[in-house]
Image (cartoon, rainbow, N blue to C red; front, side):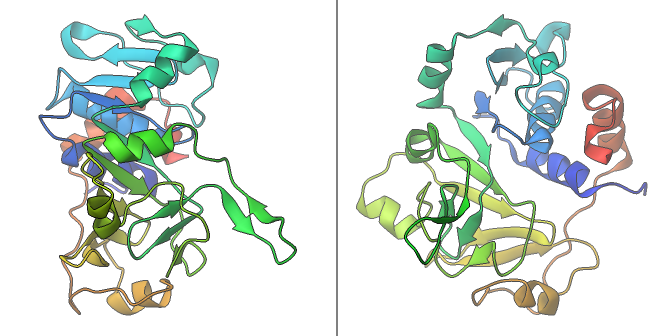
Amino acid sequence: MAAYSTDELFAVLLARDLRAEDRSVQIGANMPMARAAAVMAGLTRLPDLRVLVGLGVANLADGASVPPVYPFLFDPRSQVGEALMVQEKAFDYSRRPDVFFVGGLQVDRRGNINLFGIPGPDGGWKVRGPGGVALGSMSTSCAGYYIVMPRHDQRTFVERVALITALGDRTERERLRFPGGGVRFVLSPLGVFDFDDAGDMRVRSLHEGVTMDAVREATGFDLAGPETPPVTESPSDEELRILRERVDPEGTLRA
């Protein structure tokens, strides 16, 4: 098995989980692994998938050009596709994509995320985040979304987020009658996490070499899961070939 980076692993795991009923995918601003996942799924299992990257709309069927993978969404080289949207139309699409990907400054045991910032003791911001443009609408209504956390420690995986940018708590979503499907899973450098019947985060699998002791030490709340959880399935040689040769030939995800 070839060596692979964490971002390459993220791209493959997300691409595998996208579903036949997912017809449009909205990509977050600085998430090259998510863009790679959507493109990879469109080139393989889901040829009718509409990939919304910035102001570009791409469908990978019939040999359409493949959106390149660059570190930042607004790199002008990434604005390619079968169509371009004006800014107002981009927000129209954001009301109800089938699925999207999002990160966070914090995620808590109930699946809520915080992108606003960390309040300081003086009433100002200790850390200021990017905010939640369109995220409230998308997380409320979309068929499902994935939380991708680039770090996993007690400052990012917390008992309760300081502010809620997207409500993932299943109980609260049901009480408020949100129409969307909510969080599908949380992905971090340590593993894949979903939620039990009570709505609390639990371990679905841990990446190769990661132990339950290590993930519990890095998590700011009691994390449910078996003492010997499944090991995350590594990318296959064929998945890495497609990812590196067709989706990310410049190696952005390997950098």
